[in-house]
Amino acid sequence: MNETLVVSSRGQITLPATLRKRLGIKGGDVMILEDRGDEIVLKPGTVVELQLYGDEQVARWDAEDVLSDEERTRILDRLPASKAT
Image 1 (tube, one colour):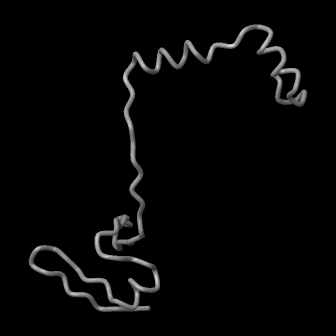
Image 2 (image 1 turned 30 degrees about the vertical axis):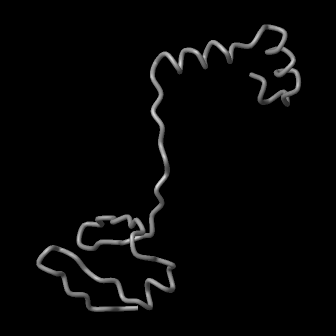
């Protein structure tokens, strides 16, 4: 599919309705622009919620995740020999 698009004075383009419908792109959706040197590629994107945790929270999780020697041995014994190293 080849389309000629006009870039507005604000740098905006309008994707053809048939293309938006085929790809399921709706107003407000996120797009990823990939610069490939002499061409650009637009791909539908996804927004993922991200949380940042402080050093104290990470240290608390590390302390809670410590295995006893017995737990470690039990887990390693259940792994195939090639993965237990």
